[in-house]
Length: 409
Image 1 (cartoon, rainbow, N blue to C red):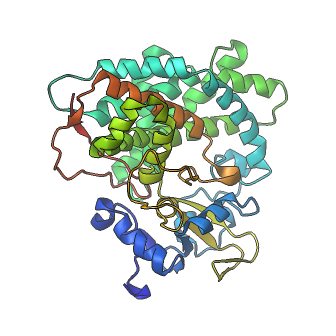
Image 2: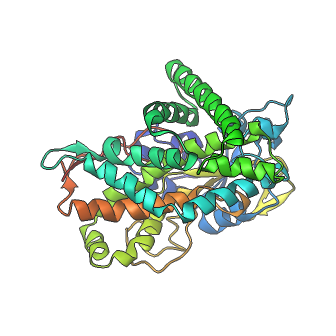
């Protein structure tokens, strides 16, 4: 494959059937032949080698906010809020904010969230067991709809203190808001997204006000308490970031669990190792994240001239790091496409890195560490309904997860 034949970034999405079926048939030659490449379609410098990707996502001097990118950076600027008539922290979440606003908001949010996660295992176990109770025995069922989708939504709803009798509408708002991650959504999907986002915004602002008067045992109350103790963030900033936590965490954790079940069923030797030694569950989750992580890319913007792999990058140039390609780099991971839960640990980049490492990573890990063992303990004979069937992966660009996962318990 010549450099002219190397795929553009738009071909490196599940909208391309070849990439959807097997991303590494395209990513492997890209990483081998042109690991640092200026993509002519997106206007971004695309990185696919582990050492380059890890260095860039860990570099705190780089920008994250798309408003700082040059006008030709279509991928980043085309999917971002570029309003300039309001403070940036009241238009975008910490996912795209730069310091000092990023640190100002992330610090109290991570403090409160991580304290919740540390004592939340029992509640996650309860939610997982409720989902397990819905699974029928002896007949085909879709694990995604019955298990993988509802668990993350119900977990974050519990952390936020959503009343049980509002879970149905909260799930609808959450699933509608996730459509905002699709830059190629239809007009109908955009309308659904806007409706769901408006409902969630109203819910969060109302709940913030209510918790200020009558605190509860939940994350929103924790954040309101920190505000009262001097944490410098507004209600609007809190609303935006609670919404981002909800949307970003639900989809990716759904795919982490679904991809993990699929990998274990397709690799029965690894599943047998996990059943024989449940203490391998943490290593298993890390290997799932490396082999079939939910997120393809993350981005940065050059804040000054730099050089990557011998290639110059100008200030304001967009940089797209392919996390999936980096996690399968044969220079770092032996037999990188194999799924091996006993693999000697080397850090993957599935959650990005640096100041912008995924804030929900501890919660996602906890949910997978609870859900996978309990699923296989409850249903020890769990199997694919059609072992030889071609799996249908979702077409959402830059994410990887199954549309359905038909199993028999």
